Amino acid sequence: MNNSTYDKKPYATLALAEGELSRIAALARLQGLDVADPSHCSVLEIGCGTGGNSIALAERYPHSRFVAFDLSARQIDEAIALTTRCGLQNISFVASSIDGFACEPETFDYIICHGVFSWVSPEVERQLFALCARALSPQGVALITYNVNPGWRQRGALRDIMRSGAFAHSRQGSPDEQVKAGMELLSLVTTVREKGDDLYGRYMREGLSRLQDAPASYVFHEYLEQYNEPVLFSDFMVLANEHTLQFLSEAKPSMMSSEYLGLEAAKYLESLRDDSTAREQCLDILTNRMFRETILCRDSQPLKRDLKSSVFRTLVFETDYRMVSEAARADDGKVEFREIGSQRVIRAPRDEHAEVLSMLGRYPFGRGEFALLLGQLDAKGSPLDERALLGVLVTLWRSGFVNLLLPQEMPTAAKGRAQSSGIARFQAEGDGAVTSLLHRSHMLRGPERECVKLGDGALSFEDIARRVAMVAGEREAREALERVRELGFFYSSSHSG
Image 1 (tube, rainbow, N blue to C red):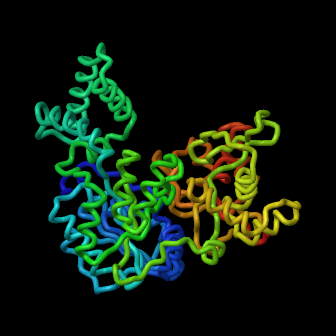
Image 2 (cartoon, helix red, strand yellow; image 1 turned 60 degrees about the horizontal axis):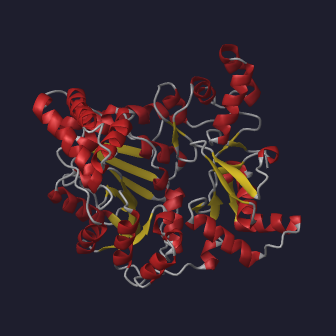
Image 3 (tube, rainbow, N blue to C red; image 1 turned 90 degrees about the vertical axis):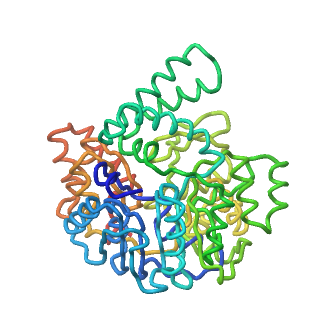
């Protein structure tokens, strides 16, 4: 990665959901690591781009300190401008290379490095690990994302074609011209292979379809940059271990589960339980994984790999799934859930897992504590006892339907007032993704953007609905307001209970 390409073609920086500090902290606590509470901690982001991730976190955690840097001076300028617009005082940005960034040893409790490792030279990869080893506090954690083989190896063929097209017709052209030239050659390949029913032709057609719908900045930096070198997880961990870092967890624990692979695979992976690197590497092979979000910590910290129920039940459980209304349920013993971001609908057995997931989805922000869930089940006369509820929540978590968070206080709005975050109101003025209070980035429609923009705390929800209805119609205004509230764009009322 070099500053000239990112200066010429900035990469839109969105909120990294897996980088929400409370989620990382919960995973660390489960492993026996007493990482700092996100509400009072220090955070470093490496390769912050335009700051969309760090700024949202800084606004969410006003008593924590954030430092972020990127090689692209243009992107850092945009990040500083956004920080000023949001009025934040707890975050600073620096234009710097990885080896040029200076900080005191053991300074940061959390390090986030998204979309950097695979896109730099081997020398810079080592510099990245050296910085993490130097900058992490004794019980700190580092989240690093990267492309992995064997899954990314097939996409490497698309990258070869794209780079060949750009080299042949636009090697000195602008990033947009290089993308156009690369796509032209990829399109030609699919035309030539159109009549063939071979695997190569089918994969090229799928790749063309996917890249045609992708932002040009993504296509350029993913497929045309000088470096994009996926690694085996085992090789990644060799470098980490050389720099006194050890594997803590994946940011998505469902990616570490083997239960859905069948008994034979689960048995094989169980034989590797005492060697986390070997187990995770074999899991990559079995699932053809393309991308990892790995959390590391210092190897001097003793970890507890066995799940402790005493820790698990102290956490907050969060879901992005909502049960479809009672009238719309299927009549075949199954029930439907809708994922609030993608609107994807899944069907699941009508059992205790569906019951608990449905309960959780009805809490504010889809978040509930263990004692709260247990008390509600008792009040309903449910046969689920404490131990059974624990088992249900573990299954939902390992299956990816539930996230874990540390208990935390969410900011609140004045009674009867509609309050969205400063960064969301700013982002809603443009046409890009907008970040919710749940640290998710969403593409919003026009009326939805208007609802978020109006959430400065001066208006009620009814006021917002009336104002948006003046340009969008009453029904669409109310649907838009309901949608952004469900996605978590508005703080709860301080007197709502």
